[in-house]
Amino acid sequence: MNKKRLLFWIILVITVLFLSFQVIHFIEHTVQVTAWIFGSQEKPYMTPLGMLGMNELGILFYPNEEPVRQSKLGFELLHLFGNAIFLLGIFSLLYFIRNKKIIWALLIQAFHFYEHLSLTMSMLFVIKPIGFSTLFGMAMGQWASVAYRIWWHFFFNLIPSVLIALIIYEIYKNR
Image (cartoon, rainbow, N blue to C red):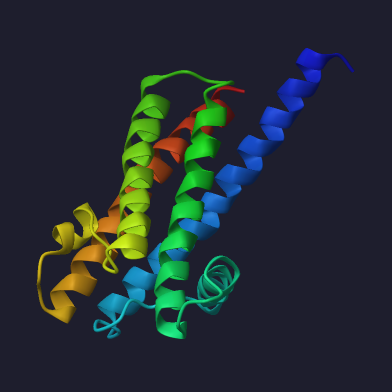
């Protein structure tokens, strides 16, 4: 197998795996919004898989922190890694297809990734997540804070996910 063909297959596998990961990530946010609508409005709901990822990352990367801070840092890191994976998946899709939908999905997801980088770094150094989805750390009630952050992240996952789904549907339809 020549190098160009090998590169093609590596990028294809990365693209499929990373975009498939976003399906799971988006389901997590959909479950979270559904839980919020039907009663869990004081604290963001996370599935057991999400909680496991959050706790394991907190323990792995911040073993000397107290458990509550470890969980909060793990929460931010889980989202940072998840959004980095989706961003890389969209970026690798550019190898195969270039159109306005992919560019828009890439730009929106890059902004979303930057948001999670900001939340993670501020949680690490300022001990408070600060970004667009927290209204830059503005003081607000627990209900408003949870509602705003859950819905903000849901829509910032929905928009690029829908754009990518439309692209995949167009490819399927044309072949």
